Amino acid sequence: MRVVFFTDKTVAQCMTALHERLQSRSSRSLEGWVEKNGNFELSIASPVIGKVTRRTYLRGKVEREGGLTQVKVDVSSGADRRGQIIIFIACALVAVALMANGAITVALLAVAAGGALYIPLAGDNKNSPLLINEVQRTLKATTKRPKKASDTRTTSRRTSSAASKETSS
Image (cartoon, rainbow, N blue to C red; front, side, top):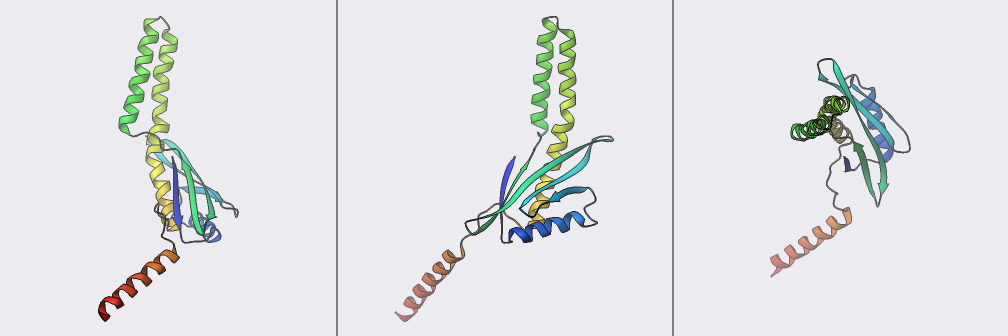
């Protein structure tokens, strides 16, 4: 999944904030690296089944475009429970079709592949919102493009001049 955020911070301020967040004691499970040129990577691991964990990686780039600081991140989103069920049913149907053709070994591999897919699908589904929220909170970023300062000044001038015309009439 690709998400674009906007922030009031400069690229250097963003990189410093991310670096400080990675170094903080409260982010023991959060790992990653930050480069001065705006590239960064964050990762988090969480348990999926028992002691089996899944580490999800978020890669991003902070850059200044048109007077705005944009944070572009890519993270694998996994699949929700409904999507997982659809994938498992598809693997089961493939296995049944292979068994009907006499390829029992390959059918068993299809069933095993369906089971093995659960770990990345469920783990990424759980971890990706955590990583996205971490970037948003650390950089104080939003998904909405901020209004330009010149537009708001012009609008406020228009409303004040209109208000003064009404009061003088």
